Image (cartoon, rainbow, N blue to C red):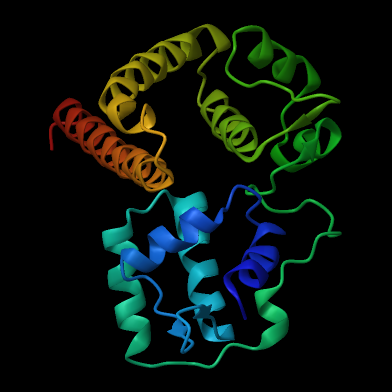
Length: 222
């Protein structure tokens, strides 16, 4: 396949993917398409499967490319030829995965167990935002799931404002770090900015989890 055909396959499930992104992943060694005599890229179905693996790991787990590359290297030790149908995303399925990009309000309530009243409160304090004409993106669903879990332990909506404030401060800090790349018009620079953002998110999650774990261990006397 040409790079345009690969992009058409992947955009069904990863609508933000661009040709620049595919070239960036190639430059980072995540995929190695063959070249024709005239220099055009030619992708195999295995190449597409690798790209889907990378994009899924970035989107759902915020994994940095270094970790994804290590996982792919381990998989290469036992290569399995992918079946062609598995490489094409199915567009008409009922929403059942938190990574769905458009989830209606009713499905969010059914999936997470959140009450309509709590969902309204979360919107009022800016923790989630409904997109016209009334659907939620993947991150909003994950936020609601986490909130529902926390409220089961007694946390109230007013406690969640601290999470919002902390996230906003972190976004502000990371925005400053990413600004030099974002200001460049070069597509490669923008691809590096997106990858840097994922790296920062992964490191932030690791730091936050370790700090909370260490703090609770101290409180529990362990």
